[in-house]
Amino acid sequence: MSTVKLPLPVPFNVRAFLQFHGRDTQAVSERVGTHTLHKAIMLNNRPCVLEMDFNQTGHVITSATDITTTALTGQTRAMLGLDQPVKTFENAISGEHPLGALVQRQRGLRVPQSATPYEALSWAIIGQQISVSAATAIRRRFIQRANPASHAGLNCYPDAATVSLLTPETLRSVGFSATKADTLLAVSRLCLNQQLLPDALNASADTQQLERTLLEIRGLGPWSVNYTLLRGYGYLDGSLHGDAAVQKALQRLLGQPERPTASATRAWLADFTPWRAPVAAHLWQSLSSQA
Image (cartoon, rainbow, N blue to C red):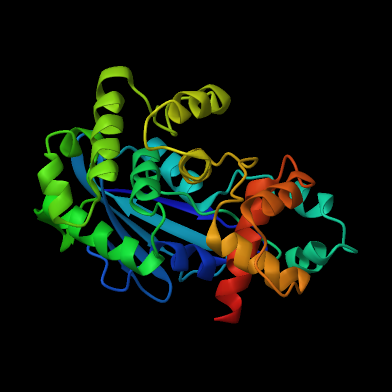
């Protein structure tokens, strides 16, 4: 068992991080408490449960088996977004702009990352063009079917090697459309054969090249690709203008009578380059705060 204790920046929004991993109240691969997260994943082809404890004010204590302290430190920092230049972003957003007031209210917000780039990509595929509730239900059944074995009471989120062995019929049986099933199997096999998604912890990904490569794959569009780069690699300039929640939050922020179109949202986000992704994260969080 390896354990690391890391200081958290001030301020740090623990609640937003736990909300991200607790979107599915019936989740089978995560257990979220008031100040804790247990996350079951496959690392290096082996099951692993990450235990994150935020009970000590200003710190996070992460423990896991079968992982070195160095790797565990990197995993924790990546998932929490501790290396994201949050203060630089906050200073770049004018307080006179409506967004500036929102960012100041939500100071310290970071973009939580998925445990692996593959998890980010597979979730992006699952969530295409359907509601969050429908996507989370499919995700739950997908995890149970792909990786049914329990590890510490949780099902590990499957990796590319596991998913590449599934059939389209299996994925269809848990709720995937035919197109999504084909896309997920294609990217899973590419991950194995061509290392499509380099490990965020052990490689410096060329996000621009990766974006071009992903966009060439049938079934992946700009939203899926930019979401993957954000949640998988912490890429902060992807435009999430096609995200319905971003559009809804922007409508509220600007007090508009109708939800802006994807093209209008893209044009609005363009003014905040190279910070379009954290802007989207603040818009997401504004909806959560009002819920």
